[in-house]
Length: 114
Length: 116
View 1 (cartoon, each protein chain N blue to C red):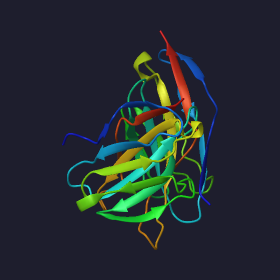
View 2: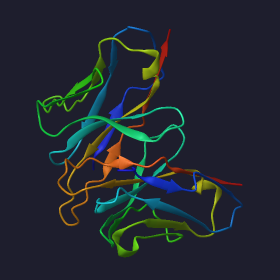
View 3: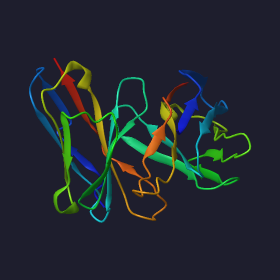
View 4: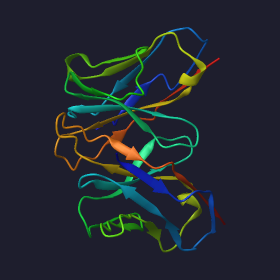
């Protein structure tokens, strides 16, 4: 069990550029969540996958955001035409159905939009 | 909707002092309750959990009891150490029936600073 990994750990981009983050969940976990955390706040839910199906998206996830989880393994989160307000820590978590509903978090990707 | 309210920090204590971090919640169903900890430069780690009323979660000397009547899940530790300095998040997880989602709703976090 190597835990949840996320890449890159840090990303600095200019406003208007596109960025993509990757999350590798714990291998047998079928559920995957993306959250966003801004300074001084708790994480906020963005979107949720069960296997390869994206079952829900928060209203925080604007049209510029898209997430995929091909083959139910790793997931990517893409932000198009980044804005300064997108600067945040993007967290990925995974869990296994009925295993106590515990979610295991990755270290996060810190995005800075200049 | 669901929400979690935590006491504001920072909380500054001397080593071996008693710790309480208050957490109250609002939920429409029967949530599970969690405390997560975030050490400097690290990701969120599950500290303890409770899945039903009157359950007590415990780990590493920390405890919290699920109180349905007061909708609370206060975190306590009898004797804190410098190594406990971190940000602590209270969270709840409630089932969204149509999608099976159990996303977490977090409080805003409480920073604990323990001085030697």
